[in-house]
Structure formats: C-alpha cells, structure tokens
Amino acid sequence: MVLSNYVNTFGQFLLDKHQQRVHKIAIDANFTCPNRDGSIGRGGCSFCNNVSFSPNGRKPAPLDQQIHAGRKVLRKRTGAEKYLAYFQAYTSTYADIQTLRCLYDRALAEEGVIGLCIGTRPDCVPPEVLDLLADYREQGHEVWLELGLQSSFDHTLQRVNRGHDFASYVQAVRAARARGIPICTHLIIGLPGENSYHARISLLRVLEHGVEGLKLHPLHVVKGTRLANEWRRGEYQPLAMSDYTRTVADLIELTPAEITFHRLTGTADKKILLAPRWCSQKWNVLNAITAELAHRGHVQGYRYGATA
Ligand code: SF4
Image 1: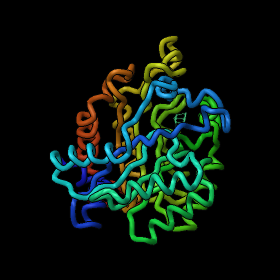
Image 2: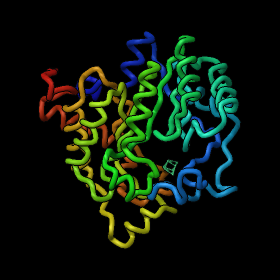
Image 3: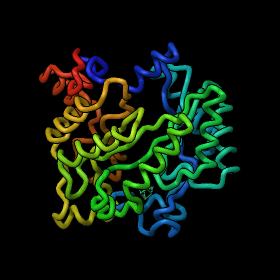
Image 4: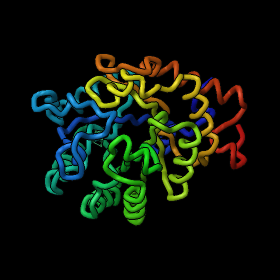
C-alpha cells in the first residue's frame, strides 16, 4: 500500500512537474508574529509554544547555513538535487518588503533552490507581498503561499485566539488568486469544540473559494501553551488516532483529485509534545490513513467520482 496510489501528494506533483525529486527545506528566518506583539493581538494562539518567543529562546542559524544543512540531509536521504526554501516558522511575511525581498532572494540564490513556500497568516499578506511573490513566479520559480487558516469557524478561531476570522482568509485568497499565486491552506483537526463535522465544513468552504494545496495535521498539545493548561485541567481532550485517520480519509475523499496534499499529519518536537503521543509516530499515522483508504477502496476525489 502506497499513499500516492490514493492521494495526490505534493512530492508526486513536484516529481511529475520537474521530472526529478524536489524537497522542501524548512527555514526559521527569525520572524515573530503580529498575534503576539500587540499589532494584531497579544498572547498568540492558544496552541502556540510561548517559549519560542522569549528573547533568548530561539536563535536560528544564518539562512545559508540552514539551507546547506537541509540540503546535505536531503541529498543523503533522498538523493534530491532540487529544493524549495520553506519559510515555515511563525509569520514569514511579517517584515517590511525590502527585508522580505532580501531574505527570499538570498534563499533563491542558493544552489539547487528552485522556489519558495511562504508560510503566513491570512491577515498578513498585503498587496506588496503578493506582488513580490507573483514576480518570483513570473521569473519561473515554483512559489506557494501557505495560509494558516486552521478552521473556517469564527467561534473556534476566537476560542483559540487566532486573531483573524474566516473573512480575512477569503480576502487573502482572492488577492493571491488574482495574481495567480498557488495557495496551500493549513487546517487543524481536533481543535477545541470541533469534531469531524467541523473539519468537513471547513474543507468545503476552503474548496469553495479555490485552493491548490492542503496541509492537515492534528492539534498538538505542547508545553508552554494555554492549551496545555486546558488539557491538564481536563478541559481539552486530544483526538484518538483512529478518529484522526477516519476524518482525514473523509477529507481526502471530499477533495478533488487535482489538489495536492502537502501534508496529512504533523508532530511537534518530542521535548515539548504532551499529547496526543501517537502523533510523534508520523509513519504509523500515514500508514493508518493509507490502510483506511485501501479498506474503503476509495481514492482522493471519490465523492466526485474518482476511482483507483
Ligand atoms: S499565528 Fe502562528 S506564530 Fe502566531 S501565535 Fe498563532 S500559531 Fe503562533
């Protein structure tokens, strides 16, 4: 059983498009977040690790060193020679446009880097940032805008203190799509007060507004967060792995075949992960999702008539 027999994975999409393996190199460019510094909100999302924001809690290596290190590991592990610089940590558009251009240019100048994936919040993509990303695309680079939506339900977004609503996501999507920038939307399964119904509705709303990629992961409880306190008090119950894999399989069936899945699960550093413990076993989770789809005999887009 191979996941890519059932799901349009981003890895397979890149292989088909570029005729060779292309992998993301995750970068921490020392951005912070407007949901913590007061410009949009304070305190951050209830699941976001506070320790990372302490003045001395985080000192990422220089950009070129991070790319060299990532390239070395990926070359050894996969043989890949082409890479996407993935500005992953925190809000990777949260700086003035000159600073952003300088950072993104430096990444694109590195050997083997053929494009950018930029992770950010829906309320942090002003027109000048989108114009910059559109320019890179016109130059022939692979460019993806990764928008952290997490849920389409405003009451959930408020409950976890996201500091934005669904309307701001819709606005960002419209502006990015008007410039032809592919979007990968992040959704979290198992947010407080949500169940598989909410996950399905959020997916359908995202599909309605147009998207090229999706990233799903279970909500993690990590140390140093308000969610960890809620979990300790018994106010939040993490998902069971079987519930997660069933919900993900449902979402895959509901997703048209041409949309790529950048990720179907995720985990946190073992040093800070409190719950659910199963999410640290990434391959177990992916194998369980594959097994669930195989058991159903269904593939991505099944709800629209797609077959194996
Ligand atoms: S938007 Fe992202 S970086 Fe900012 S507080 Fe929320 S999870 Fe943390």
